Amino acid sequence: MWLLRRRWFWPLLGILIFATVPLFFPAHHITILTELLIFGLFAMSLDILLGYTGMISFGHAAYFGVGAYASAIMLLQFNLPLPLAVLAGALTGAIIAFPVGYLSTRATGVYFAMLTLAFAQMIYAIVFKWYKVTGGSDGIVGVPRSELWFHFGNLGSGKAFYYFVFVVVALSIFVFVRILRSPFGKTLQAIRENEKKVESLGINTRKFKVVAFIIAAFFGGISGALFAPFDGFASPELLFWAYSGSCLIMLVIGGVGTIMGAYAGATVFILLEEVISSYTKDYLLIVGIIFILVVLLLPGGVVGFGMNLLKRKK
Image 1 (cartoon, rainbow, N blue to C red):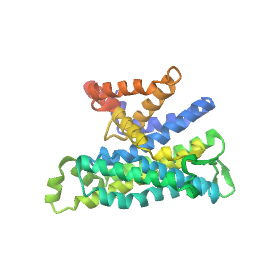
Image 2 (cartoon, rainbow, N blue to C red):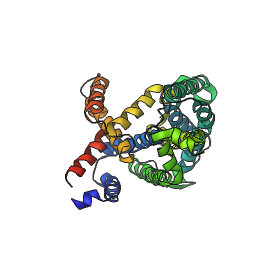
Image 3 (cartoon, one colour):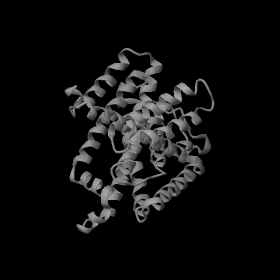
Image 4 (cartoon, rainbow, N blue to C red):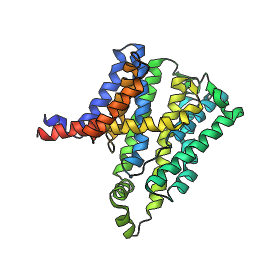
């Protein structure tokens, strides 16, 4: 039991599981695992705002979507290797997030949330209307999985692409953890707890919130950039507010303010969708009921519930 309480145990176990599972499971399961990793990264990117800075964003899907479009354009029109396309998606998300974050952080609370939603809908409208670049409502189809580098490392197979996504997600988690453990990350958590007190120390909290907004968009752009070649398609739907809502649900189900919670929530959400949708078209109703039950009965999410169980057994 002492092993379960070691800080390094769960990350190591997760790495071992995700690294070896594709060796024993069929292609369909590998596809689902790839989707879990991508949406787990998407949820984690929102968590730096919601869980660690205390800012609720209803427009986070905008950066997921623009990351997907940037990746699709780089892969189709410029024939770049996938790592460069993913980097392009991440940078595009961060660049667009700068003016949005700068303006949105002038407000707080529900006003901040509404501003993020309004800006996201503006970006959605631009993508929807900019037919020459984005394909309009038709989107961009036939996005390839390209190669690891120029004429090297074909990522066309499901297993090869999975391992690429796995490495990108693992590196993202490593960077994310380093950010949170840095003085910058500690300041964000202090802002979440008591922003007025942090301001009284002479710290410009708005600058920290803008940077956090950009970092969240950067990681959101990575997840979108991975999703475009995974799905082979980039459409305006990826920027719609419903994706932001799904990301928020994943976080709440898994556990806000925990890295593991983002991936646990994505796993529960996608598996529920996969299983329930095979039996009924009204699967969103059932997912909604489960979401309500989690909020009422498990306020710390699945991960919070598991951590409480471990503490009781000490």
